[in-house]
Amino acid sequence: MASEQEEIARFPSVLHPRDLAEAWTFKRLFDTEAIYVAGGTLLRTQWESGVATMPRQVIDLSSIPGLTGIAADEDAIAIGALTTLGECRNDPLLIEHYPMLVEAFKSIAAHSIRNSATIGGNIASRVGDCLPALIACRAEFEWCTGLSQLRESASEWVERLHVQSPKPSNLLTRIFLPFMNQNRTAPVKFGAYHKVGRREAFTPSVVTVAMSGSLKPDGAIKEVVIAAGGGQTIPQRMHAAEKALKGRLPDRELLIEVHGHVEKQFVPKTDPLVSDAYRRKTAANLVAAALWREFVREEGEGYGAKQID
Image (cartoon, rainbow, N blue to C red; front, side, top):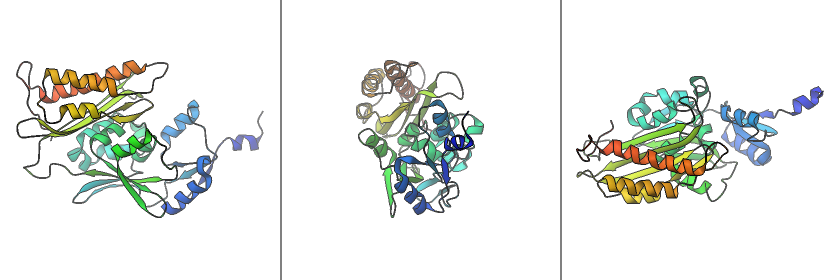
């Protein structure tokens, strides 16, 4: 039987930084032997399942001021990284301006988990189900890098993850969502978020896709962002599909072309239960179906813009 000392050694020690600078210093000092923790819901699951190794130290961010809450200025909605998914789901600003993102929050875990899990933790996992939606919403992330702040788009961040590891000491502090369609002459918007899991509710994702864009006066697509992820896959921009859609009026032939681009470009991680081929096909089906619903008024009536309020 393990001694009391051995049992205690199984669990990490907890560091309680007073501010961002101290948290960043702890991480720089202990490097891979320490990890930032807020809600910790996903980390506990990974430790228990053996997916991730329990570190020697955890850096508890919960006492650092200024990392919670949702507020708006003239240009963007700012979300503190320690704001819970439950708060994000019920926030009036997000419901009004980013209903697609709210749908993503609703699809993550159960109610009790969303009341503890933070948006920053979902992002920092690199495979969180809200990430495709944040990419499609053109979100920007603000990171504490020690003595300064770094701000980059969600799209740029995930694309860097595919080619290099980010500095582990960098600490996510805020998420910015730009205001769109702020006057009556702004372009019509469209958007969609879909998650497929192995059962109907409270399930890990197999595939998640999100898209958003704007239209020209004639109904052609002016701008579009499409992202796909799910499971243990770091989300990816579907650049070829975006390029094919830009400047064109969607029709059956175009959707077939887009389907092919997504199926070819999406490179998901496989696992013993779901193959990468299934994930690619599912992502392509979800994107094509979402575009069909957005632009087909009724069977046989042709295509047109449908505004999302």
